[in-house]
Image 1 (spheres, rainbow, N blue to C red):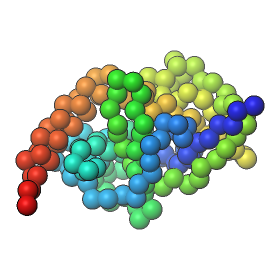
Image 2: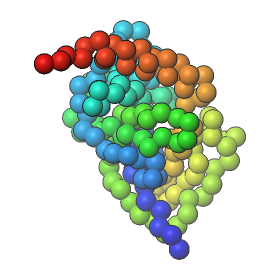
Image 3: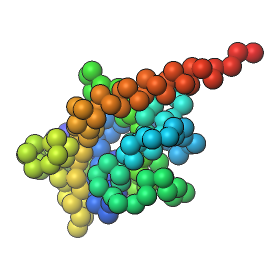
Image 4: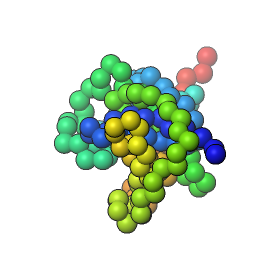
Length: 166
């Protein structure tokens, strides 16, 4: 039986995870560019080797009422996603990635109509807790993806204007 590997983190007090094949990299939280009037779900933009990568605040996206401009904790991580076909890379801001686990058990599937946009693909039991397996390609609605693409294009233009040659 094939092993499933998951990166586990908390979102609003709920254990969540991504399949590691959806994760390109875990990053410590760097300084982010945050132009005015961004939606509260966007923590800002990461300059990754000259490319503007949007950073989604998972607590804000999945319903936290906390101030979106509050400083993340000292152990916050970015999870750089490996994009699905036709999608762009995004980084997910989480309080911290608590563990990477392997399980021979397949997650119990969750019907697409049980969560917004089918963003929870399954649930797996780890010890005494239930962990919600998120589908990174379904975290945003199509209209949100389009708006994020426009904001990212603007951030990329701004980043390009600051390119300094020696």
